[in-house]
Image 1 (tube, rainbow, N blue to C red):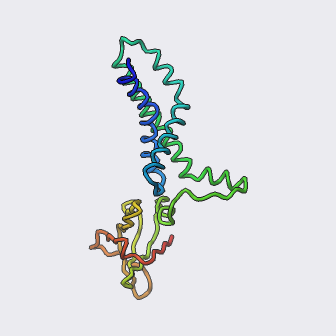
Image 2: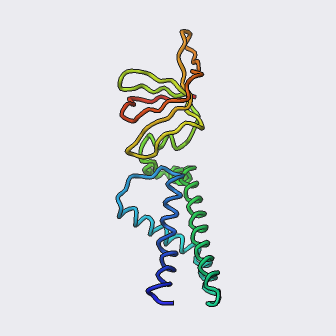
Image 3: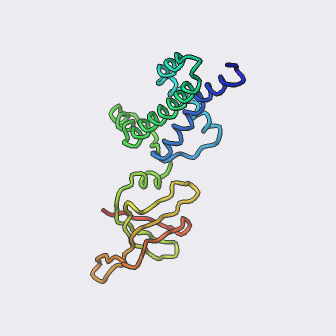
Length: 198
């Protein structure tokens, strides 16, 4: 094994790959903040170091695999890296999603910045079912139900909204579902305000 070949693969698996896996998985669980490439890279590197520290015992065990079984070694290394990083990402993501860190800081009377970068991310990341009233810049009002088949974009540049059910307001102020509608897609530049009701 030379530094120019297999060791490069080994160190890449340990110090680079886990961070990118962790960041990718976490971004699906917690709204990602907008960042530049250098900050993203250093975040990935930090996660990789944490991952390496946690799973170092597993990597030490892998080094005990005899050299005559290279295929088993590399498959085990890749599996340990991917599974370990994914598991760590899910744990960190759930902790952040449930607000465990915020709860701890609140108990210690420490103020901190919320991890959600925008109010949009904060509300829609909770994925709660709600009645929704969207007022457009044109003055038109859309009444609907935001539920499991609705969608809100997590892309900071494309804040579009899909509402799965739309309603009309009757004279007695009750909501009547539009049976012919299959939902409505609203572009970000059309939205003025959004109201939510339980």
